[in-house]
Structures are given as structure tokens and as C-alpha cells.
Length: 247
Image 1: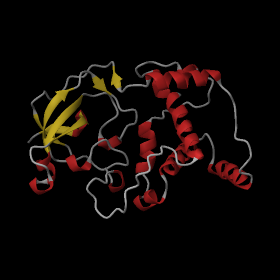
Image 2: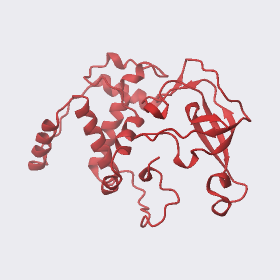
Image 3: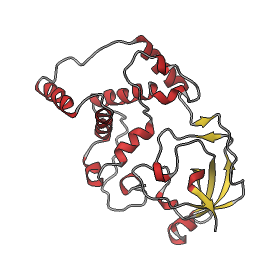
Image 4: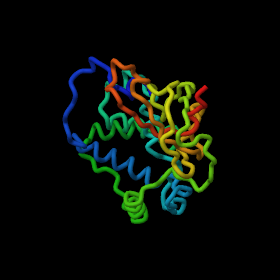
């Protein structure tokens, strides 16, 4: 992971914000709501478990949108830009850029609408009730979705196997913690079935369904004995693409 997305153990980052409020300002709720509706109407839900009839929804949205989509936009930000903005401002920028990139709106149209609301901040927001989408959002929030795929995949490793974590080329979005690269671990559990990742990470190696493992690491092997509590084990769930033979 890039620096701004894995800050554990980094010193001199300033005071910790202990504010427990999920939403500090009212507009943040709306951004969260937009993201939730996008997830609940994402095209990938046609093939996910459980299955949803999203292809029949009365909506012009026909793309995949998952947590991975949101993270990809944030993780691609320049680190100093990343630290400048509030949490939901990053969400807003990622969602806005997604709609521009997919052609739902142009940058000029977005700038025009932004200027209109800045001039008249009390103007009513669009309100188009849609019972079918409301029902789909409720179903999604109740049932969620899963990366578990019906496709069978034979695991390369078994419980008890010693494995080495791979060191793939860096990409904008990864599910591999940087501190585990090239480290040795022991497979603690092989999850049954194959799991897909709804966004392909390209050279990073994940996307298509594959086995997932829970791997145990001695923390002293990761950070050294001086920086680790004795007899401490760290467990990480890792896609098979991130594991290689120990040699």
C-alpha cells in the first residue's frame, strides 16, 4: 500500500482526531447515500451472490461500482493532495471523476452545475422518487453481496504450507499490505471456494475468482524482534496471486 493508505507505525503525523461522529457535516450524508445507491445498482450484482435483478432497474447507471472502485480513486491521488482534503471530499472527487470518465456527465457540465449551486446554495436538489431503486437499495443493505464465486478452483497451497508473499509491481490499488511483501508465512486456513475481486488490479494479479488463504506471520519476522511483542502472530487474508512457493 502507498504511504497515505498505511500509516501504522509512522511517527510525527500530528495529533490523533478522536471525533467519533460518522458525519461531521450534513453534505457528507448525501455523499455516503450516493455511494450506497451506486453500490446497490452496480452491474456486477447480476453475477454476484446473492443475485439481484439490477439489469432490469429503471436507471441509466450501467457500470460496476464497489468499495474497490471508491478506493482506487482515492489511492491514485497524489499523497500531498490526499492529505489536504477531508474524508468525504475524497469520496466526492472519486465519484465525480468516475462519472466524467464513464461519460455520464462532462467536466464542463459538472462545473456549470457546481457554479449554479454556489451562487444559489439554497436551490432545491434533484428529487426523482424511484420505488424500484429504493427497494433494491433496501435489499442490498439487508443482504449485501459476496466475492464468493460458484466457480471451483483447486488451491495451490494447503494448511501448514510455508509460503512467501509475492512482490508484484506497484499499482494504484492493491489488497496486499506493503509490509508483507517478500515475507515468509504459514497457511493457517484455506477458505472453501473461489473469491473474485470486482475490480481488476492489472499486474497486481487479482480480479478473477481464485482461492483465498489465511496466512500466519511471526511479527518478529516482519518488523524485527526489537519492534515486536514476543510470541505475537499476525494473520492476513491473502488472494492466491499474492503467494508463491517459499523458495
